[in-house]
Length: 241
Image (cartoon, rainbow, N blue to C red; front, side, top):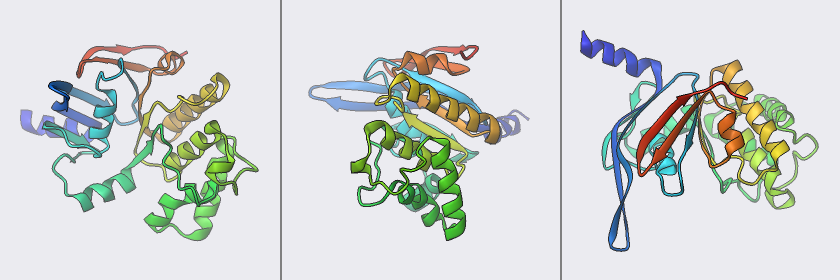
C-alpha cells in the first residue's frame, strides 16, 4: 500500500526531488551544490528559493528543468522521472511542460519581440493565427503593447526581461522555472511581474519555482525555501504581501 501511496504522491506533485547530490570541482576544492536535498512542490504551487551565491538554488533549478543531471538522486516532473531521460525525450518534455526565465534572457537577437514569443509555439506546431493571437495577448499582459516589432537590441533590459517572461508563459506550461527574474527590473516593473506570475498561478494553476536574492520577491510568495550549502535550512509557509 505504501508503494502505491508513494506513486500517488509522485503523480500529484508537480515536482519531486529525492536525495539530490551534485558536486562541482572548483580549483582544488569540491563544492557541494546539492547535498542530499529532497523537495516536493505541489501542482499549482508558488515557491521561492533563496540562498547566498553558491548556495545551490540555480543548480536545483537546472536539475528540475533537466538542464543539468544530479550526480545521484531522482528528479520527477509532472509524474515522470526526468533525470534518466534521453536527450530527445528531455527536450520534448521541456518544450511541452516547462517555461524558463533566465537572467540572460536567451532571446533570439534577429527576431522581434513577437517572433521571440511565438517561437516556442511554432516549434510546438501551433497554427499561425493562434500564435499571433496568443502572443499579442501575452505581450499586452506584460506591458509591451506597441513594442511587438522591436528586436531585443532596441529594447531596455527590463523590456527584454518581459519578452522572456511572455515567451516562458505563452504556451501555458505546467511549470515555470525562473532564475532571478527581477534582477534587471526597477521595483515597479518587478512588482508588476510578480503580480503577473501570481495571476497565472491562480488562473491556470501554473506551478512556479523562482530562485532569487530579491527580498520583495520573497515577500510575494506563499512558500519560501531557504538553502545553504546545497541543503534546505528553512521551508516557510507565509502570507504573501
